[in-house]
Image 1 (cartoon, helix red, strand yellow):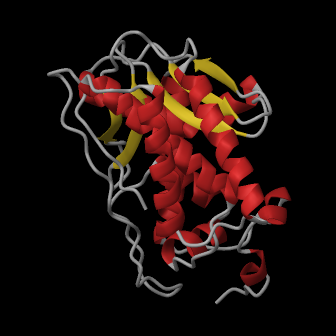
Image 2 (cartoon, one colour):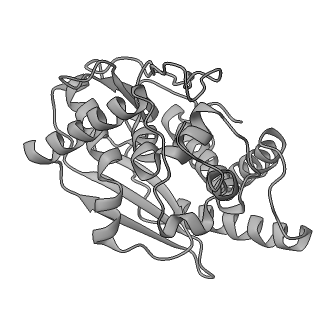
Length: 289
């Protein structure tokens, strides 16, 4: 897997980026004490979505074949990271250079993460072409600011009162005005209202971290969707910064997740998501204790 590349924000008021490398203990079992060193937006969302899936994936670390959507999303994300880092460093970010970077990321991820469940080589090539075309559309779009970003893949942490461990996260892009940007790849055009609600935990966490680091509030929390349709689209969803109530909601979710994880409350949470869950078969054999 390609390790996150972090760089400091171009501001004396922000600390160097923090590389996130720790995971939940691989030796943990349903009867062992689980004490994470920190929580991230993705880990908390995973736990709250389905605590048993969280256990299979992050505690027991049961590996499953990489889905096409996940592999493509990671390849796109890695290429955008290369593009933004090149701009941040004043290096060559031309289409030709980025196409080479995309090809490299695409192949490296296939090797590092094991087999990707493509139906056949023709499908793989079509998916690869679509993903690269989507990246090209973004690089040529008006969403790429003429101003150099403050930071790329910026790792930060924050303290939430009443939570025994810090909260950590990596922000895809911090714009010159402190706007936090997170990239999403999607097969369909997003619903703006749903996107804001679905990713509130992540975005509000970014706001809390930026505020703790800078004592300033970002003017916006943005989602930039790269939509992999026949004609790729780039759609930015701008979300206003959270007020005290929204931040308290997020803080409470972290506390609920931490209590559940450390109390080892892992159980099925049946729903529509089960139809595409890779752990459905092992989940069917679950019983308490």
